[in-house]
Every structure is written in structure tokens, then in C-alpha cells.
Length: 400
Image (cartoon, rainbow, N blue to C red; front, side, top):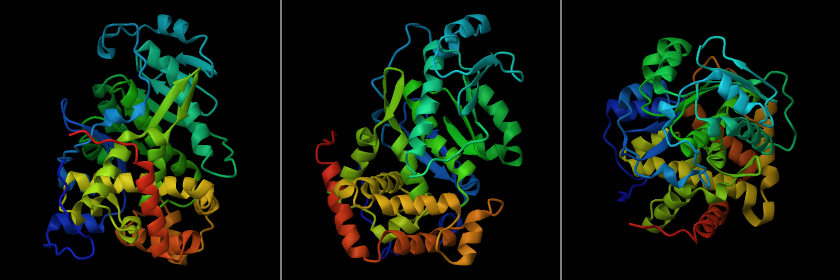
């Protein structure tokens, strides 16, 4: 995979409507995206306006099969999920003894659907794969605990989350057209994937491993949308979300293992080897659209953006046995409680979800938050961060 050498600081760029639009945008739709049956798949967070500009015609060249929940458990049924006959009676009997299900009934709005209630989720699904259905309740509850673990104080829920998991894309499209209203055309351009909107996660089955990966990633955005008073800057929100892309199922519980996310680790190692790392100060002030525009809109740049934010969040959590964990916790707690020590205008924009965020807001608040909560010495911090990046990819081998 070839990466073109570029610098966000020194590279001269031609002004055109596409790149200018990318720089101005700040409200992002986070989706799991696939360009075709034989093409790789990847997370892409993009605002609806950017999706219109691109038509989602960007090819990601890193296999999502490197990430996910493993080892993969295969259903004993040899037929595909699409050909499994939906039978409420048989499925309800099969799920009757599943730990974690508090209530199981038909989905009133869908004749071939189940409404599964767990401690923290209402899962409305037309999925007909028995094995996946048995594991979904454990997955979402394991993910919920993992989201809570990012915070030193537990969040108290009075209302359960809503997650829609469709068995077929056609069902997902029909729901999306109704749910997203005037933006439906934009969301329907997602070729294969999921999105989180207004604290609701909407996905459809693209295979066990990939489906759980998108539910873990989008579930974090869902959690933030519901509980955080402030919206998070792009580097932090996306960096944390990548922690839930890879997991392992063991004795009825899913354990999230970001250290096994070979998709992000492989991209990070390649960026280090080829000298394509994004400078820290540029990284934290960028959004995904700017990553593509600033690097000539090539697919490797956007993947590097996600991989470095994945590494940055891990660095804050893990470096030197948790030396910076308190800084990380204070940053998230400020977003949760709405108590960041930033300029009033930036705080107001962070709190008002009716107003689209801008690239300028993302840039300014990232700098203020980093200087207030993380460090004022960017040079020393970046040196330690680069060292950490080299350490976590040491055992990763890139195969051509």
C-alpha cells in the first residue's frame, strides 16, 4: 500500500470547492462503510454535506477483517443469514434461556421482528441468525460496561438505549428513510454499515465479526450523545470509539481488546515506517474531512488519522503504567458534566446539539483542552507519544 509523503503545515494546496468544503465542515456522521463485495471495509466519520460531495466514492485499503470480535464463532447452520427462515416461535424458544434478556416479545412495528430488552438496551431486530441473536444481548451489555469504564464515575441511566439491528439491508433502508427524514438520501449512500443518530444506533447484519465491530464503535457515539453534556472534539470521540472495535467472546462475556486491533496497529506501523505520521498538533485539531483534504484525499491519510487517534487515546490511558490516566479521566469528565475550562463561546457550541459543529470549533477547543488538561509542552508529549507508538507496533508484521 503506497502512501504519498505530505505535510499539513508546508504542503501547498490548490483551492477548490471540494477541499474548501472539507475544511469548513465539522458535523460528522460516523458510519461503517464498504465499497463493494470484494473491497475492504472501514470506519468513516463524515458529515452529511461531505458525503454528498464525495458520493462516498473513497476506497479504503485496509481489511476490516483484521479487526472485530474473535475468535469467530460460526453458526451450526450452513445456510446464510439471508436465507434463514424467520420463525418467532422457534427463535423465542431458542432465546428463552439466554442470560441478560429481561424481556422478549414481538416487535410490534415489524411482523418479522423481535424486541429484546436487556438491562440497558431495547434491541429491535429482524436478525434471524440464532447464534448471533444469542450473543447480541451479551455484547451490548459488555459494551455498556466498557463505555462506563472510560469514566472514573459511573453514569446513572434512567432510560434505556434503542438499538436497531436489521437482518437485511432493504429493511435498514426502509427504516432509515423514515428515521432520518430529509437527510435520508445521504444516509442511504452508506453502502454497507451503521450510524448513530440522536442516541439511537441503526445497523444491519454484515457478518458476525464486522457487525459487532460497528456496534461497539457506534455504541460509544450513542453513549456520548445520550450522556455527555458537551460534544467531544473529533480526535477524542473517534479515538475512544476505536477501543471497542475488537473483542473476544469468553464464557458469555465480551472482553474488548484494543491491543488486538490489527487494523489500527498495521496502519500505524506503516505510517511510522514510511514517515507519514501526522504531527500531533495537526492531528488533534483535524477532523476526518480535513485529513482527506490535507493529504490529497488519499485513503491512506484518513486511515492514518484514525490509527493515530487510536494510539493517542491508548497513550493517555496506558503510558508509563497509567501516568496520564487522570488527565484522560478529567478530560472526559469535563465533557460529561459540562465543566470544561474553555472560552464561553466554545462551551456553548459544545452543549448546543441543534447547532452543527464547525472545523474552526474543533480546532480551537482541541487546543484549549489539550493545553488545559493534557500538557502545555507539546514537544515533550509528542516525543513520548511517538515512542509509545513504536512500542505498541513492535510485534506487528506487515505482509505485502
